[in-house]
Length: 116
Image 1: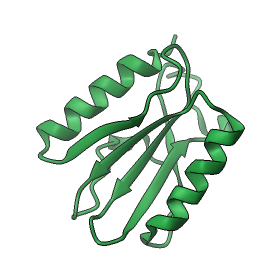
Image 2: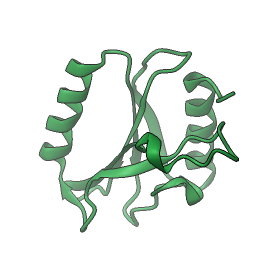
Image 3: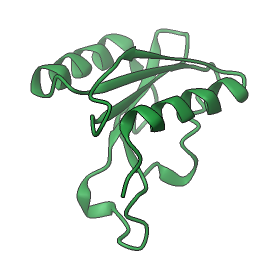
């Protein structure tokens, strides 16, 4: 069983803040199972967007884990306007999404090994 989105988001915010980065929930989604998107703001007008990984990459041995993949910025940071446009489309598709924004000039995402 996977952690509820609200609990995971709280733990992630705490992790970011402990590491010295500012992080905040920009949009609160469904507490039970809302999809979570992480916007990494590099504070220079660019960033990277992480979202839920495709089901094909999940490890059946660890079904409770949340995995993320890079949605925008695979080859380096992209313009914030592009990230905002993608987030707007995601909200229209699923109004229960969470958006967490992390501000870190070094580009640290604090997602451990979960980024695929």
